[in-house]
Image 1 (tube, rainbow, N blue to C red):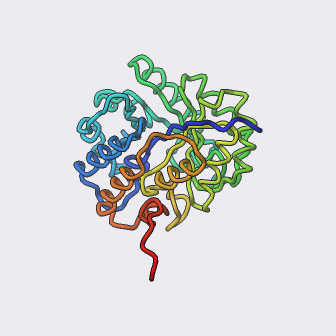
Image 2: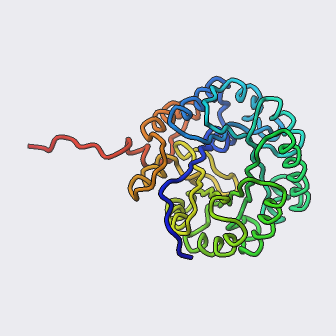
Image 3: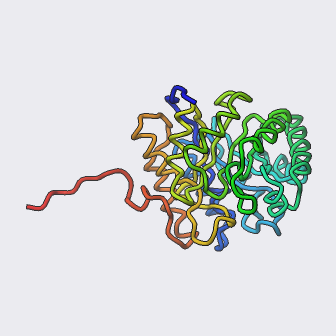
Length: 309
């Protein structure tokens, strides 16, 4: 499908939530708050801050209420929180959340393994969350997990993603985000999926969430741009990922790498790469392991040194 490449993209920084949620080290609340504030200063208009899940399910997010209340909220920035069910929504709204993220899987096996709910049960939860969110004046971003491949069922056909996306739009989702949860997608997969989905809703109603598990994330971003998509998730330093992808696997596409690519192909994003690098340098000590971003590892943009004499 040929389309005009967008001149500007919107980046949703997911490092504070998706990046940190599975970290083994307990990250102090004040460190999480500072991380979000540094990312706000980098120029993002969207930041996924935390998750209002049960603390037993994701201990790293047990301080969601405190984190969300403590961050410095800049005008014009949308601060998003993941909400798994109506109970989580009540907590999120009480903390002042105005932008909600929810997840539904494209396969039954993944849905049951991840949240012990069928797809239909998960969609009913989504119905309750979207209805209550609208009544409270909050907006909803809906994710479809394993939209390209499932660790239990293998490749996922576009025909399985389409009805889930259709239901989410019917429920009132502002945007549907397609998650390559285990990092198996290729550019051809992106094109095939969007051939099926774009007739359902225009390009600006879709977001893409790529993992770099097999080194394809930036290639998939390019394929997305080529079909007219302009909304992308990324994570500072490449933090995060999916535990189903295997030990040591690269996770979310790194924000630094995405910005470097967009600069190289002349697509505007309005995010300060140097400020993102500053945020990544801040958080690396807290997580206690190297970050996977290639641009971070290289120290940023190309810098020249004196030639040997």
